[in-house]
Length: 158
Image 1 (spheres, rainbow, N blue to C red):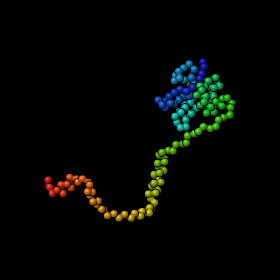
Image 2 (cartoon, rainbow, N blue to C red):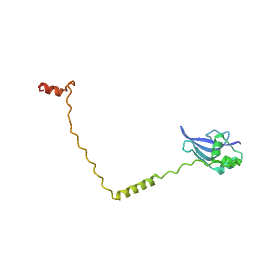
Image 3 (cartoon, rainbow, N blue to C red):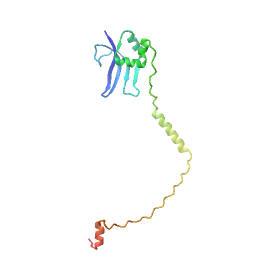
Image 4 (tube, one colour):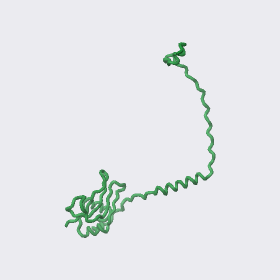
């Protein structure tokens, strides 16, 4: 029985997520797997690659052949170099730890409450700008008169 280490596609349309599996080479891509040994999520930033190193080393030692894509992933994690006896690659880029939103909110609330209790200086009143005298523009001689102006000028009452 020829055994392969390959990717089993999971996820949604346009959002691929893969499991790294040990499977018989004659099974379908998403068919029955012998063992699940890791995950790969290429759409994350940085890509998530988790591999059970001890299980991969075991399967490589008993003759399982990785697919090209899985071999590239194993090279990034250092498992392929470990199997071949080569020097280890540089460490992978690790995503920064996410800040706990609830803790951050509580810290902000405490800081705001501390500021609210502290005495504040009274704000100076801004000087009010004096209103400019309004001047009405004289109606233009060329401008047509509105109905009210036309009615008032002719002396007709409605």
